[in-house]
Image (tube, rainbow, N blue to C red):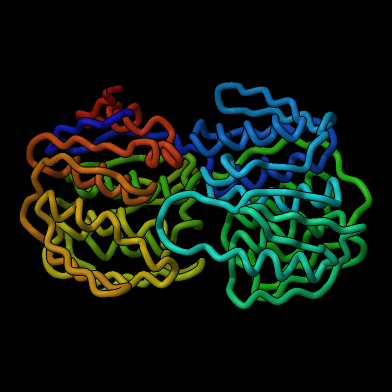
Length: 418
């Protein structure tokens, strides 16, 4: 077990090169199995979820080689279509392999997914779409057993603009017979990144980033080389870090166009922001304003993944802020830990009222999920005294070398292995 120990009260100042996006690289790695050849993925972050995905790839028969920020997947030896329940339970994004494996083998057997305990993640949209494409699916003993003679393109409407379902349909459709259309598709930048990678392999995906996507099935894909987009949630976390400590930060390679909702909120709360072709710069004005209301919504609305880091910022703002969580019903698990540090937060259902306090105080707290863990790190950076954070395995799912990046920007943070 590890813990992060943070001495608060030091302004964050410096420069950080943005890591690749966790939510983009995982479906891209799943897609690589469909090439039957070698794919080389650059700007690949070293995260627990990427490590687990590498294990999945190897168990399917791929050869995986890892460099500093590059991963090479040789899918020429793929010989299995099963992912065991233990691996599936460790990360909810693992369900994305379903469409890819079916595209390769016509059969798939995968355990039901797990991940952070932030609420229900129904996969009914995934299964409904795959059934429309001709897949026979049986659920028994914690496994999904799927089989089809040939995936067939069709018109699919999503009742909710699910990112995972959109990606799974894209993966299943690229080698399906005929044309597949997705209406009410998710519009996240990570969808565009996956589509660009698929097209680099020889797929024909059109309209990614809009609510209507068309995929023309092809007979064969091939290996490709690709660089993953920067992580927009990690970018916003570090921008908040500079703001909550009264510092300044330059994020190299961060893409401002991917996080307009978050940048708008930071500006409203008093951040001075400059965007350049090189990245995004933020300087604190020394005063944090409250924000009237933040409602999480599908992209391009305010991202649910940024809700808890922004709540840490609101906890020390001047005034009252309101958060309404519309995506996951159990995404306030960080609140009790922030309260332990002196925050004034009241939760009722899917809403949280945050009354800013003058000061937070160091405490022993625990991360229960990825983004809530990031919120605790941010609160500890602003707090008076020492904070010890356990549950670092959740933080490591999405943040590459968080203690290294922060310490290089002046934050007193260290990891202790206990």
